[in-house]
Length: 129
Image (tube, rainbow, N blue to C red; front, side):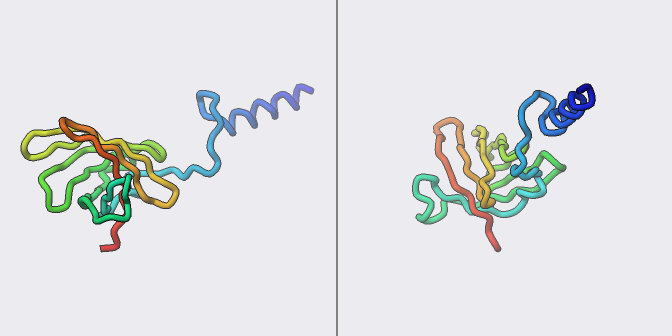
């Protein structure tokens, strides 16, 4: 009986996180390297319309990255944790804000941009160019 209890505790320890929450067996471990690239952004409420902008994500290390608008005057610093992340951005004119995003199973990003006078959601598709 004691052996069975020890085995059960070991199984529980291996299949849960430090906080006792079950580990997801099918959630990939995403890093800044895995999301690095050029993305084309579309309004989330109408992703089949013309693109709004492009952004470039460059990994700094495992969990942090730089982001910038292609041909635009904005840059940002971000962090990814699992399939969620954020980046704090600033335009050349001093305007700043934060974008939160989720990495979807198909590799697209769903983001929410919030700043002074700015509040919109996007779907970002990786560009092949």
